[in-house]
Amino acid sequence: MVRRTLFTLALAFGLVLGGLAVAQTRGGTLVAAWEQEPVGLDPHIVSARSSYQVLENVIDTLITLDAEQNLVPSLAHTWTVADDGLSVTFELREGVRFSNGKELSAEHVVAVFERLIDPETGSGNAYRMAGVTSIDAPDALTVVLTLDAPNPSLLGHLASSNPLGVFDPAGVEDGTINTRPIGTGPFMITDYQPGTRVLLERNPYYWDEGLPYLDAVDIRIIGDETVRRTALVTGDIDWAFSVPPQAVEELAARDDVVIDSIAAGAYYYIGVNMMEGPLADVRVRQAISYAINRDNIAAAAEFGNAAVTQDPIPSTSAWDFSYTPYSYDPERARALLAEAGYPDGFELEIMPNSVMDNTVRAAQVIQADLAAVGIRSSIRALEWAEWLQEQGEGNYDTYVCSWNGLVDPDDFYYAQHRTGEVFNFTGYSNPSVDELLDEARMVTEFDERRVLYEEINRQIVDEAPYIYLYNPLEIHAYSPDVMGFQARADQAVRFVTTWLDR
Image 1: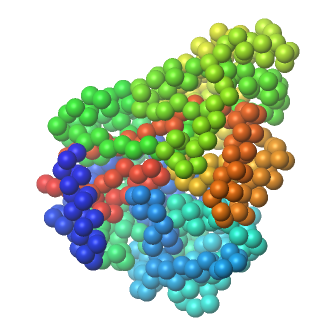
Image 2 (image 1 turned 180 degrees about the horizontal axis):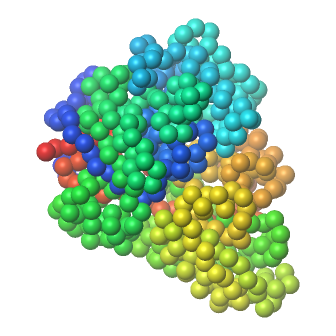
């Protein structure tokens, strides 16, 4: 850990002096293990975290976030927000090329963004450009976004969301967008075998001169957490997307493994199908929230590598509200069930996914807690692709999952909670929340936005369409030979400055 920290400081110093790397070794292949396979690679269609964190290394955004979550240039070297907030102008870098050698122009950005917001595309991420009424290219290096109202969350979305990245739109026409999107990022996809591997090789045209240091990143799909842990300590892999949470303390004590962690902008939760039956009654959903012991759930799921919560935003964020209306109170849960007409409880199903073992462990504790108040539950753990399909089609009673890579408060609430949004799988619809969410997007001043989001947070937690469990730590583990990598609060996985000290 000391070696990594010293390198990070040295690299930062070198960048201040003009982008010169310090003491890095060029070349080599980093062998990395993902716990979940990418579920497609079309940036506008995918919703899986495993897909986004491949795309992070392939597709650049106009602007991005540094490790401290500040807005910094990427494909655009400057940007200007109009005084009235109704337009944003981006000036692109000269000479940027896609990994196929094609020169990037503003027209490519226009084509990509227009596809994203086109309803026929069916992108669940179009909401991130809400209010954008036109996308124009006055010249080859200028992009202008025109808005119908100020949107203070737009820059954060552009910086933190891979679906708002820029790729060669020709991939849409030739059908390669879902397997080998062509970007301007540090790496390019040269092999994609669903369920097995993704091979990223250095982009020879990458615009940030001297980067990346690695020749390639060989991503292996290893769903079994014990196998990932073993592969790491035996040297079969160099870097693990995640390791068994119960092994973190033991691995941190080893000389041959680096544990790199940070509090994540993410949350684990129970999603509730509100469309019919007992779960349509708010009192039943509140009863579930009283019935569960979040401390036990977090301990079982993450082995202490998490902070329990009753609302989504972690305490490390400036937007934290720490709203906690639900104590662990089985008696209160039973009273609410009786009030709702279910004194003897009822039956329901809990749907974790078998790839994320922590969701299965969480489901087992939830099952026991619910049984104590008369709710009889079964667990149906599915493989990731089938789980996504069942969730999307509403074929569940409750599910356990996470929502990740969140920065702006809009990220935590809008997509999952506004009526009719693509990622609103529970059927939650509250006109008051909808109005507040829309209003909050128009407000630029922090204190005023905070008041609005605090009320949004209160209403959502009280109505419990999502029952929040805990905020996880973002944990990566790797060999001490892996240098220049840094765990990030936005959960981005970036290998652009990573190198191997061998």
